[in-house]
Image 1 (cartoon, rainbow, N blue to C red):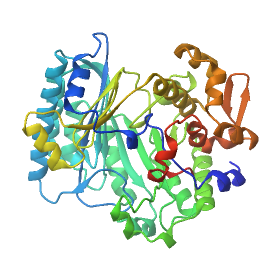
Image 2: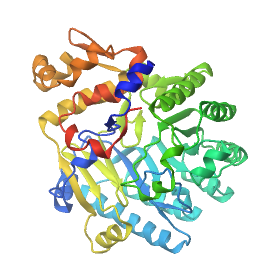
Image 3: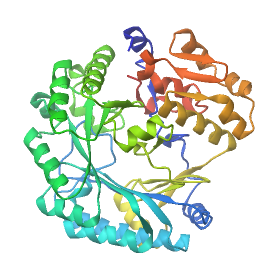
Image 4: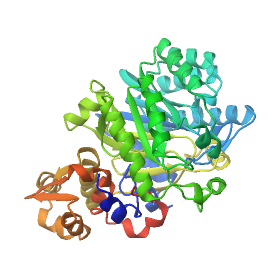
Length: 450
């Protein structure tokens, strides 16, 4: 990584490109009737991924950028679970058959806030309405602080085979500043318990750029994390957007590292993980050499969706729950973000879609280019442009931002082969943004490039 490039490009606010176009461009032009039409038109040969959003936590972490709320009582969670089961039934009826499913992801919030028996019932509803393939990956996000032995048993019974544990930082000073005090012992107990229950795939989430964080504390967190040998680690830069996430106002701006300090932290974490035997994958993932994600990366089969980097190659994504986003061949759909509004729409017998986006041919072309850049650090423009019936020169002319990236040594263009230089891979979002025709209208909504 080059500090001069971090200083030049690091302050720019850019999407993480888990979709293209990104969510700020969704509109109310796509609603329940459009979604129902798209569901009925799913090709007979299609396979799907399912995402279920559980927007509840027992306490709020000040850094959080997710759509979640604090639930001190269990009753609101039970009501929400009932709405989820109704939505699952409603969507499957629109499809009209048991669609094959190769991937299920429970996100949050904290999905394991549910009662163990409720989780088992919810997975049962999915298996009843969809044909969950025997090889399907069933993943769930976990807060180790609230994970109980009964829930660990329920995860094993339900067939969950991958868990993502929120760690962020083991530094007590940082933990206090973000309102997330979590001991190493809690994380270790959760990891050991999950493995014993048959949840073989373990992911850890780490964050740099947090208040009072230093290179030393980042390295200490990495050292302790790799003692537990997770299969994968996601390493995100903290996105400080207090205008949109008001709880982030509890974090003092003066306690946050600047762009160069964030750069040093990201560098140190990356180097330490690679030294420990992990392979860096794309923007923010690391995996063991034998992990399926590493193999997919090496073979050019890696994908990117709303859960980040994934081996998921299914044809479409169906989202359930408040704010959940789905992706179908025609475009994107998103449910009502507020829990009560979501529950109200489902209770009225309507799909909960409140906005979305219908893809154009140009969107599909640019989405393919951006995904390959984000996944492979490069792209053969001729291959993709030919597939879409577009001249490569025309695409290059429509990406004026690319020239400065080439001049600064961030990108090399050899014929139609574009490659992010090795020392500039931390700026892969900046390269992807060169092909984003919608970027200028949404810059203020995104996180810093570094």
